[in-house]
Length: 368
Ligand SMILES: *Cc1c(COP(=O)(O)O)cnc(C)c1O
Image (cartoon, rainbow, N blue to C red; front, top):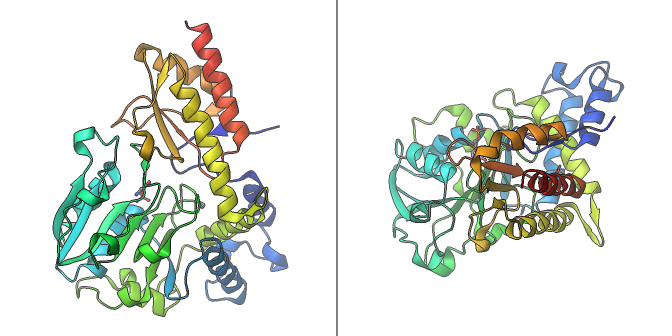
């Protein structure tokens, strides 16, 4: 029996091979007689799982040696506080607000830093990203925060800003919750990247933080020890019990990613080619349709989350019901934006996007 295609924004679809392997190993991992959830995080079995996951992620994302990879908890929203607690030194933090998620980051950080809004996409209803040359960056910013892919509004940076070229020495912080591992990342432009796992990597409960070493050790005194990046780094993410199941599942996803091929390309580069093909195909269909529309500026359309609207919104409920009937799940848009949203992360194959477009054509035809 083949499974339906799941377009959830998060927690989102996980590759079937990964789920199958986890099921096979559920009661007895590697002949240890234990399931992963039952193991000591300090035992040799789990340490081997942790070390492989860390090494595979480092390889997949080409993370330089002077960056630490931390496996934490609390999700993206907790990082909205944890980042300023660690990086702001109580000084200024700059934000570029391009949708709901960077807006939330901006609001939360104000408890710990002097926030400055360097640029906002609000005037365009968050359908475009303000040109980096127009950003009003502070001369004393401790860091500059952006969200590399706005999961709700469907806008994505096609290239990360080069702060040095803009005359700014502050480290760039990116919330990459919803596009991590979907494309290669230029670490020369980044000081810290964080993301919850539940969009593109595994189950909810694991948060990935990748931070340049020189940014460790500056936390405010009020920073909880378990959220102090230096403490977490010094203890190899085992100051407190890490989310062991999430790390294991992420590790299986990393192995799956390493097996992916597109022509000559492997790993994240292969995913980028596949993600681009999927998104181009879907946007091209939307742009030529009479019934459906996407409102995002073509220069910053997300490859991961594609919001779209029926021109006749009275047909929304019928659309969702008919989609479900065809095995196309969780297409309802976020309540703050409305309409529909197709999230097509790494785990969504091209066949899923084709099945969605086939359905949408049929729906348009039968309801014309
Ligand atoms: C989902 C998401 C978050 C929130 O993650 P939580 O795990 O719910 O805290 C933050 N940022 C982005 C870009 C997201 O997509």
